[in-house]
Length: 242
Image (cartoon, rainbow, N blue to C red):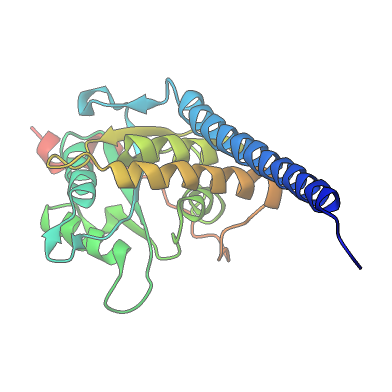
């Protein structure tokens, strides 16, 4: 089959038009996707307004605080995200605001156990063992928040983590009719944590899909292990004795 120059030009124009249409379609898809991700990010932040506390003295009396786990060390360096969460938990107990803790995190293997690591630090600070409850199946934020209600039978608690994480945790809590507030502790002091915040944007999109599209449940549920209320919460802290 012979092609004249005019046929070749026509084919070239047709191919160029098809490429332009394809590129335009890809651009629109990317643009809509980016707008959706950004919109979810702003929505998650907006819905948490009024439920985030930034000062220890503003935290109301609560029976239970859920401390969300993270690794204690990054290499050989103490993880500031971890340190600030644990320090806040200890301070809240010492001032008599929180009576019990639910320490929720990953228990991937024997040498990596977030709940036990947190428990050990609370015990060192003088928090009684009977005030500490462990959730070894808090693999993700969704697992930690949902299991607090479904397994540990509490739906009115304080969450302790950083602000960006507070917003996602409260987003998940709201979808399960959990009446939670969150104490936003500080993050790293030596760097901005930009990469963490960037990952959080996509984590929020994943949370949205899990809650409203996929319907993801926690990896493990199981029988209830209700946290029993303190008998005399006002006297639970030795530092409040006269």
